Length: 160
Image 1 (cartoon, rainbow, N blue to C red):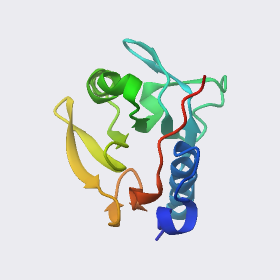
Image 2 (cartoon, rainbow, N blue to C red):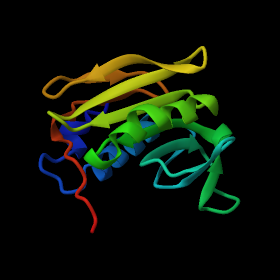
Image 3 (cartoon, rainbow, N blue to C red):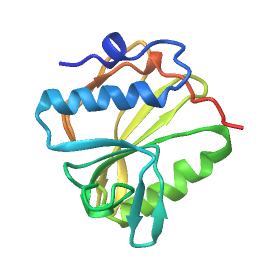
């Protein structure tokens, strides 16, 4: 069992998404899941193109062009909510992902403290299955077993 906080995540890390990406990749490998964990890759949805923060896709999904994948190959999308894109990440993007049939959607919130909202697709919309709170270990079983304490995650710095 992988403990993302203890083994991978470093409190105060300047790039919160990188440790989560690394932790997801390690958990997928430990579970023997045939997936790729990707950062900021183009995902082709029926409604257009989006670039999620983290994507877990079927292994080999990027083999054709390496810069984009079809929504059918996506198992999980993780969005990191920042002050400038709260509405997009909380409302609009999940609607697009649900319309595309992406089974798992996780949203990492940072304010007032880091927490991971884990959702699964049910009847065309996302339903919250768990909320990982800081200083508590939360285990998620799908798309592969993953354990996390979001206390060590920090909001990515704004580029400018």
